[in-house]
Length: 147
Image 1: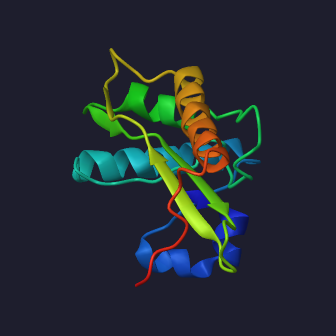
Image 2 (image 1 turned 120 degrees about the vertical axis):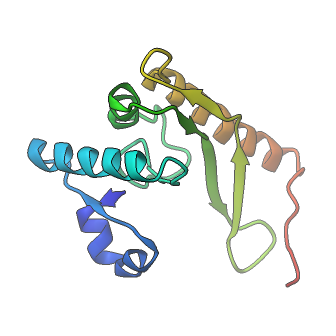
Image 3 (image 1 turned 30 degrees about the vertical axis):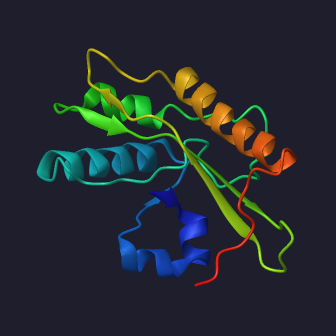
């Protein structure tokens, strides 16, 4: 799920299943959430990627100000949903091309009775991003990979 204007700009994401959401339209938000619920109900093992801030922002943005869409999906789903928080940062570290650094948190199995509150998700992603910053400062990040 991506913001409609970003999907127009990065149109190639449509080829891997991206679909849009317009945050300025409450009706569009409901339609996108219903569409996501439909995907989960028809294909419980589906992988849906959501930027919980509602848009792609610089990794140093604080506070993250996550939207409540994921929590809403969990509360309305008949199935358990596995949520995997991820911190992603692009950084030039001794290379002319940017490195993509990914820090993956622990999977949270959620349900209507045990949701993943938005403030906890925001905290977990902030922690993952802060750990990336710490690793860069302490030079613990591998700086290049030869393919």
